[in-house]
Amino acid sequence: MKFQKGKKLKKLGRNSPCPCGSGLKYKKCCLRKEKQVGNTKNLYFRKHKIRLKGEKDIEGIRKAGRLVLETLDLAESSIRPGMTTDEINTLIHDFTIKNNARPAPLNYRGFPKSTCVSVNEVICHGIPGKRILNDGDIVNVDVTSVLDGYYADANKTFFVGEPGTDAKKIVEVSKESMKLGISMVRPGNTIGDIGWAIQDYAEERDCSVVREFVGHGVGFEFHESPQVPHYGIRGDGIVLVSGMVFTIEPMINLGGKELQVLGDKWTAITLDGSLSAQFEQTVLVTEDGFESLTPYE
Ligand code: MF3
Ligand code: CO
Ligand code: CO
Picture 1 (tube, rainbow, N blue to C red):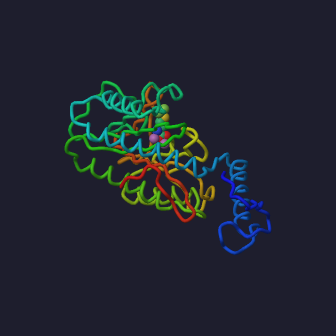
Picture 2 (picture 1 turned 60 degrees about the vertical axis):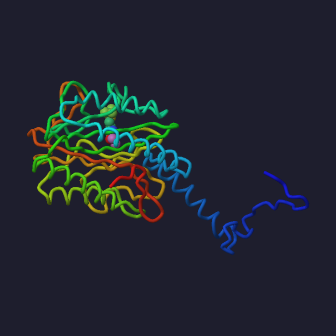
Picture 3 (picture 1 turned 120 degrees about the vertical axis):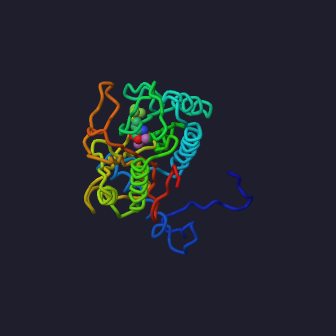
């Protein structure tokens, strides 16, 4: 702070003119807003264990988000028939470290690798290994990076070589359902509105929505409150307020919604062996809608 000679710095009082220049008293303008923000923050933590994010946090998550998207681009440009899922893991691990970040999955609750790679009937949490990608496969790559202490989480499903009709359909439906879910995000809408939009669309296209895995708050930690189901009832659940950051990541199956977790305790596959696809973004609730912190088309 530099002091101007002769000018006495006036303390900002409740009755001072608001520094925002509205012409109103501070207490009737920005002080009131600041108190509201503070109250909501406390209320949402007390009631829902949701930690609302401030400007600095949001910038941190945005930055982590940019890295996550670059990482997904790297994966996409490397994927080809004949490669193993472990090669994707190595690429992602090395790129993350090179960019001064940490791959959140590594050692998370015992997960042994730096990313999840889920092929065809694998719904999610595929452990990278010796499985070879074949022409016509679909492969989901899920990247969560921690940069300067902030987490961003996103995934995409890619085609390996030339996709067949089923592969094209499930990838399109899962991507569109994520977009529809995101489009419901605005203050005043509820968590249930998001799940409802996704389920309504996916089932209309004769696909099914996985129930066991949900979107989640993210930013300070990998998985925070709230849970964000990809099915539900309009108007149900927690009311969205600005400063909330969570993922929307519907897992959509071509057949039934039932799943099975393999003996490795992670890999979730469709019980009927049908294809499953997923897209995920990390989304911020803004004053008038949403901003994706991992934006892609
Ligand atoms: N990235 C996944 C998600 O979207 C979580 C993976 S947990 C892990 O929530 F341990 F498998 F990495
Ligand atoms: Co997630
Ligand atoms: Co993820």
